[in-house]
Length: 290
Image: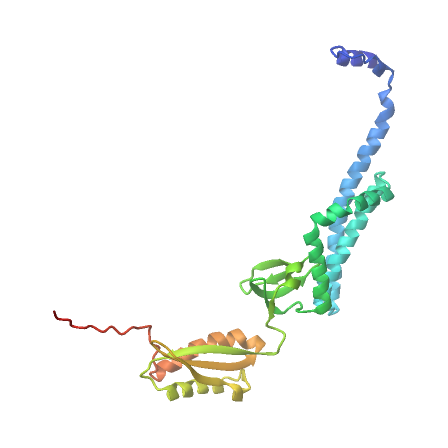
C-alpha cells in the first residue's frame, strides 16, 4: 500500500525516487506527535505562565501597599520581579522543548551587541529608572511638570513613568527623558505662592483697591503667613494700572485659592465701584486745512 502511494506521488517526477519506498514513515509518527505535543505545551505554558506572573505581581503590589511600603519602590520592584519571572519562564520552556539552555544563552550572548544597539533606548530607560529611584527627584503622588506635561505621578516603572493629569488622562513618559529633562516638582515644599495681576482704571483709587485686596486675604483662613502678603502697583499700562496680589497658601489649597479669589476679587471690586478697563486707545483728529 505504501509503495502504491509513493508511486502515485512520484510518477511524474523526473528524478529517481525509488529510494523513498525503503523508508518506513511510521517510525517518525511518534516523533512528530511528541514534538507537536511539546509545542502545544510550550504555547499554553507561556500564555498561562505570563497571566499567572501578572496576577502574582498584582497581588504582591496590593500587599506592599497595605503594608504602607514606599509606593515609588513598589511599582519599580514589582515591575522588575515580573520581568525576571518571565525571562526564567521562557528559559525553562526552551529547555523543555529540547533546546539546551547553554546553547540558547550562547546565542543570546552572540546577539547581545545587536540587541543592545537595537534596544539602546530601552536600556537608557532602565538606567533612567534606576537614577530616579536612587536620587528621588519625585515620588508617587507628587504633582510635577515634566517633558511638557503636568500631572500627578501615578507609578514609576522600570522603563516608564506614568502621570495622571487633572482631567484624568494617562501620560506615559520614558524614564530616560525623566532623568535627563528639566522638571518642576510642585509638591516638594509645603507652601506655594498664588500670584494675581489685576488691572484697574486710571480714574479708580489705588488705595481703595489695595484695601479691598488686603481684606480678601485677611478674611480667608487658607492664606498663611498673612504678613508676607504682597499688594503693590507693578506697572502703569496702556489702559490700566496693574496691581500684583500675592498670597501664600498650602500646596494642597493652591488651585482652590486661585479659582475662589479670582471670583471674589471681581465681586468685591464691583461692590466698591472699582473698574476693570478694557484695552483702549485714544484717537486724536486734526482738522487740516489747505
